[in-house]
Length: 133
Image 1 (cartoon, rainbow, N blue to C red):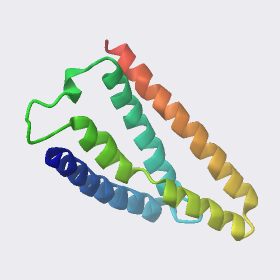
Image 2 (image 1 turned 30 degrees about the horizontal axis):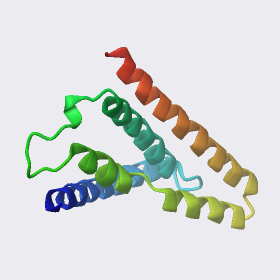
Image 3 (image 1 turned 60 degrees about the vertical axis):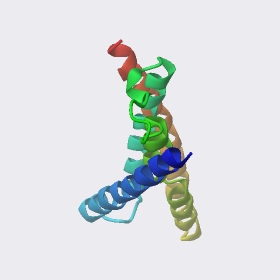
Image 4 (image 1 turned 60 degrees about the horizontal axis):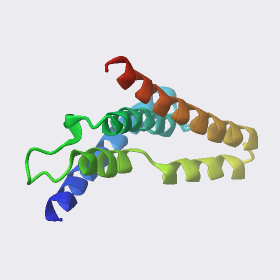
């Protein structure tokens, strides 16, 4: 149990740091009038979870832990890293903020684009793993 908790904690720290730096980098490059940073984070996280989900479905040894101190690569990568890296809370707040600021069309576009691209990214992750079987 302690190994699992440590795996999630370490993954969460790294995922949160990655989200902070990548989202901020994108915001500085393209501006903050549209939440491009959060969109990128969520789509790239969806792609990564698609890859890891496909590997787990295939029983990949990459997701099996050889070290008992590191309880589970799944707990580290998916529950910890991707759980903290992707951000439904920011997505929700930014969608609501756009709508409340009278940007209802942009808010609806952001929601639609986010859902469509994230689903596509998960599917692409599975396809990519399937190509290398």
